[in-house]
Length: 257
Ligand SMILES: [Zn+2]
Image 1: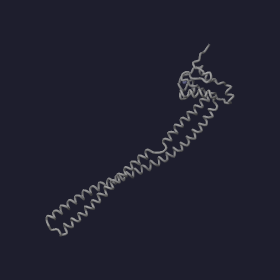
Image 2: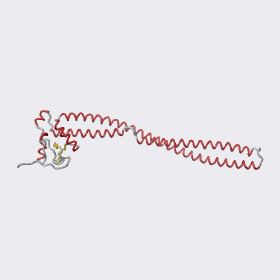
Image 3: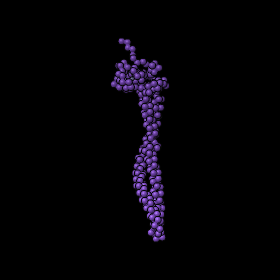
Image 4: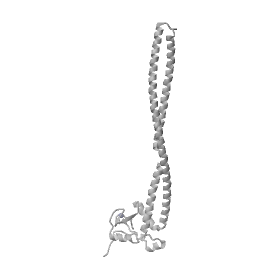
């Protein structure tokens, strides 16, 4: 019975068995291409991880955020301390004035009732000013205490975050080193894989790769792993042969173990 295959075989891609013998390799072309693809997939995946690691190396957002909060707290503390000193100086000034008034009042030098009454009034005003300032100073001191405690807590937190960050950076640097070595080894492996495949096959592979991202599809249990279509017996037979066969559905090169 005459059979018209669903797949189509590109004539220039027919690789003869003799060729394998020439290059001294037992692998089929599809297998070599599949191996090349696996290496290229590993390179792509590891380069992506490497780029992620490099992105995470350097400044820490958490450390920077804490440092900014500490800077704000220190500025707040500075402002409060200035306010506290200013209030304390005003209290000293008022107390000095009050002493002078008391000396006049009770020193016996002033006898004029009007003048005495005025001095008493002045004494009351000074006492009231001092009470208000003392109240203010107490409130400022409470605020200073709270901000100082916040600052100490932030310092502790920064210490923990910085230590964790440093350790992560060390791990990250080691991981980057490992990935760089691995990518470089994979690239060498890729060069070796490339050197075992002829130029025309490679051109075809690269053309397919451009169109479909990955050019080779593995066949598992009679199914193309890329598009999940069940392959006909004839397709499977062809895929077992020496020629490069495309999947009739996704048009990727089929690789059968
Ligand atoms: Zn397919």
